[in-house]
Length: 435
Image (cartoon, rainbow, N blue to C red; front, side):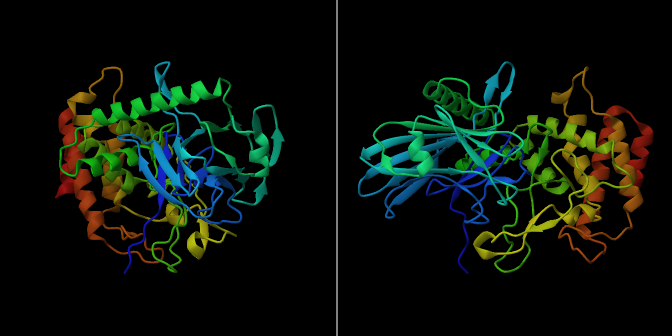
């Protein structure tokens, strides 16, 4: 069997993610949230998915794609018979005014490298998963795309006529394209783009320096950590299972699901990975997300929630071609209705450091024990209840070893918390569940 790979790079800033093809085309970008409609989605439908690309005029070209070292900044180099050029893509992220600046902004820097390459820029965002064409309004130095809740704006120093007509031109100097959703760029284009690029590179490299990663496959671990980081929706603390929807588990399987939501199980493994490399900011943000959900829980935790804590994630099918023709294309995920009882143990184990690790001691902020007790009570109530299990069977309920493993792990974590805080009643409950 030939291993399938996705020839794309990913950029993001913990507010949005974009997948960039080796031909410079934005294959996937959802705005304003991870789980919003795509504004560029040719990954799932070449005809309805819109386009944002900086392709060579020639059909014959080669490309090479790489990340700038220890960053989430992506470089794509295109070579044709006429010359070569580089496209640098990034989502700005850096500290500003004592908080993270992470706008809904994709910046694309286009540099000639050799010869006189001819390029063609296309920018046609869409709405409502490809069902809505946006109207264009031309201004002095930008193009506004109207029809969504907020304006999408492309600010560029490329002649707007070439962009609107999708006409190729000679690239003989550095060009910039700044695409925004909502608040536009209201500053000098070139100098601001360069400052944002430098600041973003510096942020990511400092983030990597602050990790604790050994030499064992170090480059791969760093790259994985960088990718995982931008899958946290920092506004609420939710961590999504994937940035896309409806990529098939296997060709023709029809198991094409929407993974742009926060699974308790997947998040446990992601937070464990961050914990193992000495990063804890993510777990603190996730705690706020879980604390908000816990106040709305009635009887059980769901296996997954929306990134804003939404409980209802109704699954629907869309009239899209699908990735390489694989249908159906789905949004929403009916797994929210499943009973998956391993979630309580995973919540407890994931949040354990906040309760027992001395590095989290803060007199002004504390994690409430009520959350721990609630999860232990739910473990007790579901101890003998069949569930859908790790594999999320849609029409089968049975007892799963994996679920019992996390009943035990969660109870063990709960007992550690109880002992740390001197709560004998909570300790007795956890001990009883362990036996």
